[in-house]
Image (cartoon, rainbow, N blue to C red; front, side):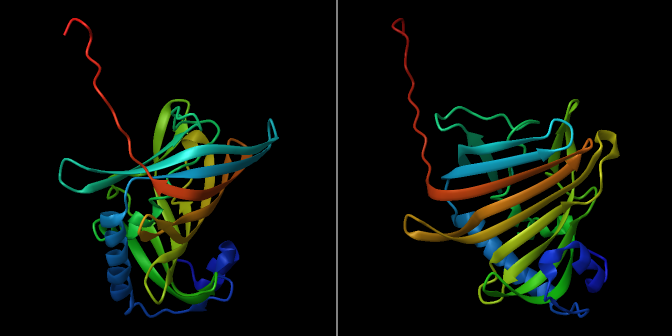
Length: 259
C-alpha cells in the first residue's frame, strides 16, 4: 500500500488507468461515507443462503484440476456479548451437511463479509491511503488502499496448517462507487508471508453487485478469484455466488415418552 502508484500498478494490474493522487485530504470524508454504507448494510442484511459454485486448479506436486463443486453458502447475523452484530459464514453440502472450514477442498471462505474492514467499528484496525480515481466495471470509483495493523485486529483471518489455524493479516485495495459509496470491487493480499508454514502469497479478487432479496436490494459478492502459493504449490479457486435467498432455521424439542 505504501508503494508509489507507478510501482503499485506493476503488481496490482487492476490499477491500470488509475488517475493517481498524493492528496490525502479527501480520505477522512471518503472513509466516513463508505463506513456509513457498510454500517447500514450490517444493520439491515438478513440471514442469507446462496448457491456457491467452485472451480479449482492446483499446480506443483500432485497437480490436479477439479470440476465444479456446488454448495450452499450461508451468511448469518447474530449479536455478540457486547451488543455488536457478528456476521458468520458457513458452507454446507447440497444435502445440508456441514463442510469443515479447515485445510482441504474447498480451501477458502469469508468473502461475503470482506467489506467489514471499512465499517466504522473496524476502521481502527487498519490504516488507509487514498490512491486516486478510476473507471472500473462501468463505475466511476474512488480507490482506497488499506493494511491491517498488527496487534489491532480483533478477529484476523486464518490459514490452516497441520498444527492448526495460524492468524493472518491482510492488506488490499477497494474500488468504491462515487455515487453511493458502495464497494464494487475488493482485492486482498496477505500482509506478510508466513515462513513457518511456507505460505508465501494469497490474493483474493472480489466483485460485488446488487442482489434483490425479498423487498430489499443488497450489495453482495457475485464472483471471487483466489490465488495462493504455499509449500511449493500454486492453487487457484474461482467462486460464483447466485440465488441469494432469505434463510430461516426451525427447530423443535421432542420429549421422550418418560417425560
